[in-house]
Image 1 (cartoon, rainbow, N blue to C red):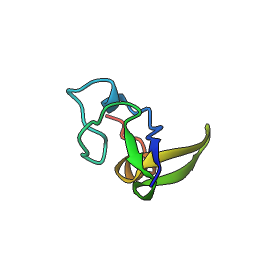
Image 2 (cartoon, rainbow, N blue to C red; image 1 turned 60 degrees about the horizontal axis):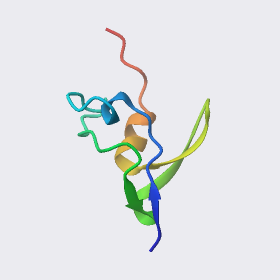
Image 3 (tube, helix red, strand yellow; image 1 turned 90 degrees about the vertical axis):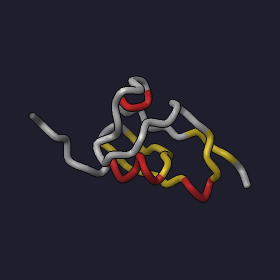
Length: 65
């Protein structure tokens, strides 16, 4: 099975003290995953191939404090 990079650019991938909005732990930016663990998401900025945990977060509304 082929591996692809997670294309999520959430702050959690750059700041290790943070988690994604859905509570997923940060993983290294562009970490490789097998194709079966990735999904395509459509955003206002384009279509991206991301891991399923990141996809859950990408589809959540932004929290404003």
